[in-house]
Image (cartoon, rainbow, N blue to C red):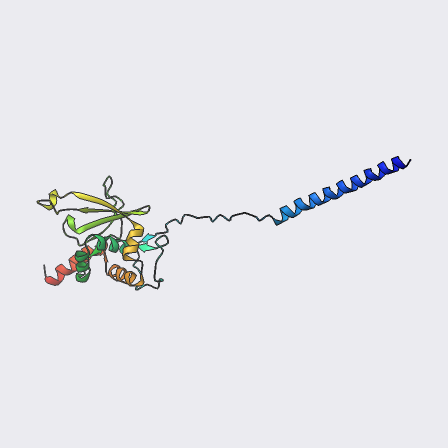
Length: 211
């Protein structure tokens, strides 16, 4: 009887001991989970900024109230402004002189000659021979520029048409990314005359000289 009581006592003690160990083990695992640092890294989403460049034929406003720098992905340009930057890139002295003389024009309507390589292109011109035209068109992120290159030709008729491409953001960064540059471009752009006015100006000049 005593032996059975001892066995039962030992069994009960072992059970209590095991239960305590199990509780301690569970408690240890819970603390381990609770203390474990979380390694969730926030992933920044980089969204591609689409270019919002709007070409219109309206005259740009005088001056500029933009900040010191311009985001080239969010710029609204008129045909005159883009044409001004293209002309400053290609023939700055010729362009500036033409603006000063009041003889520099821009296309208020894009070229619509069917089947022409210039279809859809706008231009800046002094209305002289073919070398006095600089054609340009915004194509995605690039500005395609076409011009007649007479630098190595015996005559203009034999001069080839050249095509180059420049990134729009390069043009903006070079000619339009500060307040000072904006004012310069807008100053030239505001003095460009619409091509539709060219015939009227020629007629007026002819009448004033009596021709």
